Image (tube, rainbow, N blue to C red; front, side):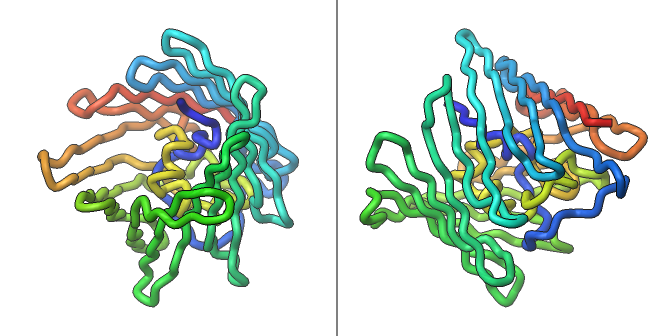
Length: 268
């Protein structure tokens, strides 16, 4: 079941910054902010509505229709300019609370996803390496102990963009490579988003976001997934843009898996 913290992956799998600074707006007095995202993903109709306090995310509401209708929302809580907690609700019931921890440089180092009403916690730890890669380890367990290693990941960056991710679990694994356009990302001006891009692009975090929002400074145009066996799978996207170079539509090409179609509306 999709959760709205899922909203992030909507935003695209790729992150482009390892700092917590908000990107400059194209308009100093009135920054461009995403207000509405409509998507059709493999036959499911999805609607996401974004509300803000200034440039800080306040709430992302969603409705997903595929046979039955699921309604929910995510509430965002900040500490200064950093996102500290995301509270997920489905049909007005709190389902998950996700907590973010940062180091003194503003880099994300730990994420704890706590399931409401159940003694189940998933923690993801990030380690920053001298070669500009980042390693992550994901553990699950109870509130007292998370001793089961579920998977590991390695993130590769070039020019502050995530270009490759290696994913390993047990005896299996896969590699994903990303290519981007040069346009503005729909969430470019949202405070604190760039600091959590590692989690957004992790296996656990990407389950909580719609594919249409992958990427954090630019937008994804190609994703190549290589699971080893079977053969690799390539997904290509095309976009249309407004006068300020933000995408207003994103859709898969006819020769790609899907279909995935996204429509974006902004505050201006």
